[in-house]
Length: 159
Image: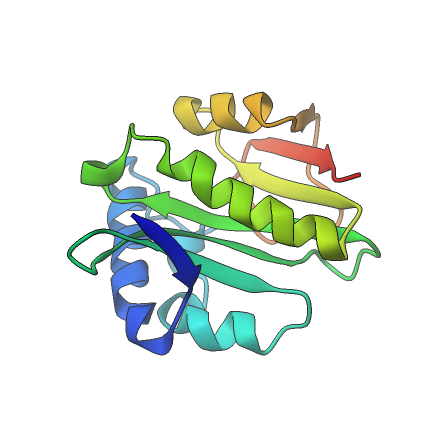
């Protein structure tokens, strides 16, 4: 496996990975990434923002098997958001999410003071990873949140 920045040729694959993952948890509902307007053009979306990036994990067969993004959060000075961390079912359980998050958080530290993320309590494995990587649970979303279906929020100081 190796991790690289997303390219336009990866857009459709990542869109499918994200949609299939959300469908597997019955989360293909409004208020989740499933309906994000940029979902089919992630490479262009992240390229047009400053201090933002999206990375994909690629296996030995050169297939994209997951990804993660960092982007500014809601015009809040010094706060970024960890976005769209999704892995194919076949590639889960081997530490890939942790590796993707390491790349994303290393980038975030260069540009931001805090990293915020939104998720769902029922995504237990993901929540355990966030806590293990130093994210602290919040009681409510930060102002400016766009995903109303989320019920778990975390923040990490990046110093």
